[in-house]
Image 1 (cartoon, rainbow, N blue to C red):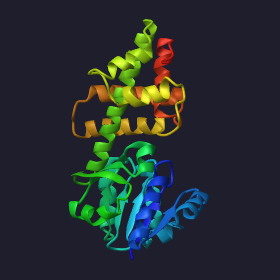
Image 2 (cartoon, one colour):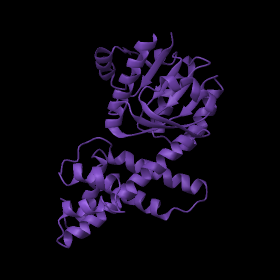
Image 3 (tube, rainbow, N blue to C red):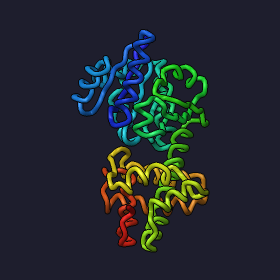
Image 4 (cartoon, rainbow, N blue to C red):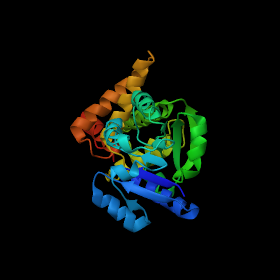
Length: 294
């Protein structure tokens, strides 16, 4: 019997840990869960048959999953767990973290005999609930194969390179989300000012070359309806786009569009609110154009 641990029971982590628990029951494993708010861990245990645990207890697990807001929170729990970690364990970080942090964390854990994989996920809360997330993994390929059977929340798992590569791909992916969301919002605001019916405009765009997930799903379902349901926070999207900018500078690359959108998302975070849904970034475009996108 293996002991699996999952740290971070937010909008993504809670259903991910639930899928892990279902997998564990079928294979004779047990799952420990931890959350900064202990009541959440207790509720998860009652709902899914996991076991709420302390950081000391989860540190002794064979496989440790983390799904926290940033690499800073991972550093915080890692520092508390370090004296209790078990040599031979694998730490799978599903946080949308920073590639530089992954390199440092992997080295620190390796000194303790623990393997680190950066394994951020994409697919949103719906993908997490359905167990169909895309997992992009950086680190040792052989270590991934050892833990692959436990990735019960995944619909697709791709090894993208060495340590930090998973975080790098995730950051660029989310920066591209920001680009398409922002650019589509600008286009619709202009069309709205020109008196065009935006629903009809989206029908055309979504049957043409300008379509994207933003035009097909996010804007029709969240912006035109004015619902802006809180799923993926605007502050987290701005953080990820900022990581993409850091990556660009680190490799001495040139990505001015990504940099500009990262700055616009950070501005939207400050004006609209970091905890608002990421689609609410378009409220800043609306203010800039004195036109609601509806």
